[in-house]
Image: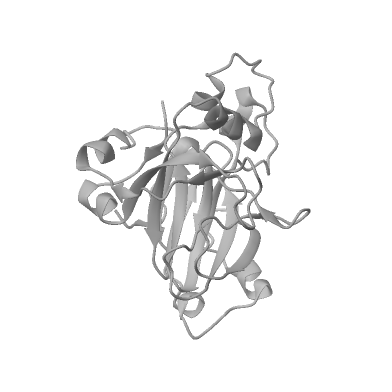
Length: 245
């Protein structure tokens, strides 16, 4: 099936989105060997490709990507770098839905991918989250994640156009199988294609992504300034925050 993105205007998605293939890293400074990273061959997403990604009415929110604007002037002001404890008390849904604060991370510009395995000090590349630790049969019961760019720099969301069900369909697995980032790496290592989208997030922009279903990471490669991103987890209906697209 592949990923689904909620949007009303395909041109708005195309304007902030590029596409490239994934490859395996080898000898790349600061990145695990065997991690999946984007190639350098980014190109514009076409309108036809955008339409193939469109979420249909009635789709399960747990499986849909949203790009939204979080109206939080105090948090998104470039001159005001909020502390984690302030973010912990901030609710991007203003009390309408539960949102569990996960973390806030400062990133320097110029990084192809951003998530680091702190145990080894190397970046993971495109990966799969496992906060809710669901097996394959129960994976859609996992929470989605909000990622809010607090600036001051821009950043990008990287997402694969295949989800973990597509990737695991390449090799027969038991529904009780516990999917992992290694499944993404094996998929690419076997010569199977994994297209990646690079979606721009300006100051105050956010994504809502099923990160336990969708291969993903962040990127600050084209940024000229550092940025802070804050994360929350939860179950939310579609359209609870104002769409960017």
